[in-house]
Length: 183
Image (tube, rainbow, N blue to C red):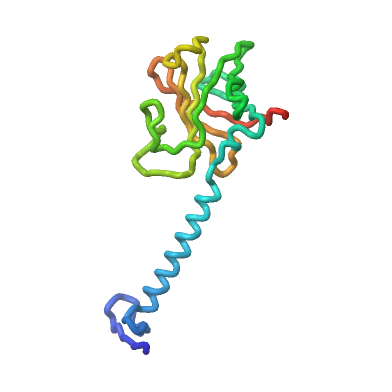
């Protein structure tokens, strides 16, 4: 059965006995294993809870977002299939076509780039969004569209933020939820 080991001063403050199991595994070690398992289960359930879905960006018929990039402001409308072609950015009376990639991970290469801030740790949260705005109005030329690459807030799902580039210079952007497109 259990053995009783005396640690007379082996470690400071440990002048008491520690009961060991049949295989000589200390009660302390068993408790640490149990605590580690509980911690892992807590973290795993938290991560699973925070996973993002396409609906968080798109809603049922589309979501309208207030988009701010380097001081410019506009209204971004992201629409799901079959209305994807109706995704757009409105700014000062002008309307620009938008295309997007949703529910992606930082480590995924999208058009030659990993997610902003990717440091080598893989994620399965799916909270990355990449979208392109056709500011020049050239739908046949996707290479001149301005790229926006960012992440959804995983706790509130009511905003996303990231980086955009103009003439190869990076700028910050953020978008906050305004309302759902009515069905």
